Length: 601
Image (cartoon, rainbow, N blue to C red; front, side):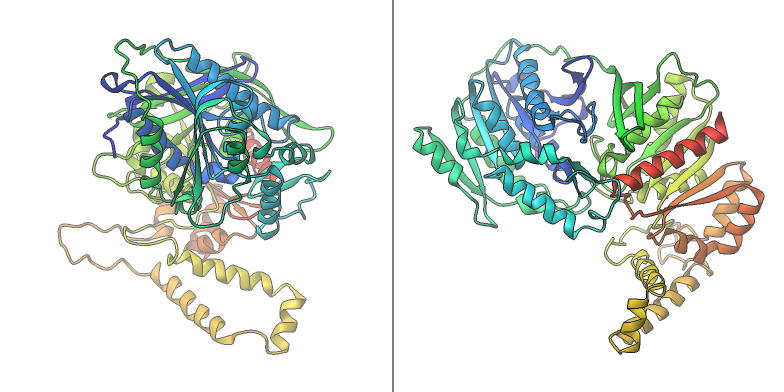
């Protein structure tokens, strides 16, 4: 992998002032610039989130080969303005690509421009290429037909934890893995057929998958139309599209595509290092639909921050406009949920930060090092869900907020591993943290070597499942008719006893006397946080094991702290661990916003 540092990337906003688009520019180093520029067009929805790390690596490799890269986030996705329920989504995504092409053309050093699209992003790129003359086009694992993509989305919805039973999903809309596709958006997607698009590109590369039989009707149609289309069959797409914490960067496939793109080189001696766009924008008019009459409106400003002693950390600060008062309110810091980058699961953090800013709170949604767009620290691996670097990175973020904003108080907020990091920041840091807000915590103590598949929290999840089953007559019928595996239940009970004992005794003394192992004493740590005058607030989904984990390991202390007012617990109805449904996300945002307003207004 090329040795690229954080300074080769530049985040920026561009496009229409009323609807700013977010992107990263990956700058080619001066000695290797070859006059080529490319827009990377990502997939949509959950595939965008899962492939995020791979596409960042892809852009880095293109830049190392001398290609200037604009890594795009379409209108209504990622950190761009808009939401997925607005009308004319497909047209807005196509327009986003066209704005990106225009942005590339503003750089005089770029003489050849192309598009690289992945999955449904390949179809969007091909559609734009049929309208605009380009120097090259790469379609990587394209969807042959938009209707196939919609069929896949419906399958994802049916097999997910949250499905069409969500009462807020109406009028034929579907919610696949936490992203909404209205009936109109589905219809527009189904009209896409890559075989009917004739790209106006000098060079074209069609990259097929090696793990399934692709529909290559588009490839045949393009060749029948007289286009010179090269084809590669490359491995790695399936692994790239695994959930963010498990996704694997397809290094070999990336190298092959980069070699093809950079083959048409032309050495450029003079090139501009000017940055594109501004580093902040004012966003207004976004909304999160509640019903036919009520909407959340956002009118906030956002700034792009790079910080840290090695400037390897990235975050986006949402701040109220001048008409709002944020005096004496604490700054809210949002911490990565798992391995998902700063937008949060299903874009939850974007909506939450903008809502809180509308209510007068400054909010920094940051990437811990090795996650999202923050580089891993030297000597550390990337994409580690529970990274030991978190508290050190939070320290850097709080110092930056103090220096730049004069911030005097902080609220730490995170989901899952972000809750773990908020908890440890509140326990360990001397900074003026006034509150830790923990959403669905699954672990308060994580030891190096543990894995997500065998972590103790899985046993709590299974126990919570059985406890819910006790309230269902259908489950009792299975018990009465002998259709329940008693061995599994017995094993679960034994495991649960072991877990309860684990938190009642000190951790074993490490074999290496020079290694300090932190004692896992949740009750003592909760008391430590309270003794510092810091609040603790838990927002836990009604189907999540987080409440059971908390009460099983420190129930007596939790109840005592609740009585004293130092600790609160709120349950979020009809929710799962990552608040996959729109209704759950809306409810959570409302509850957190009300909680902070009531406490700090």
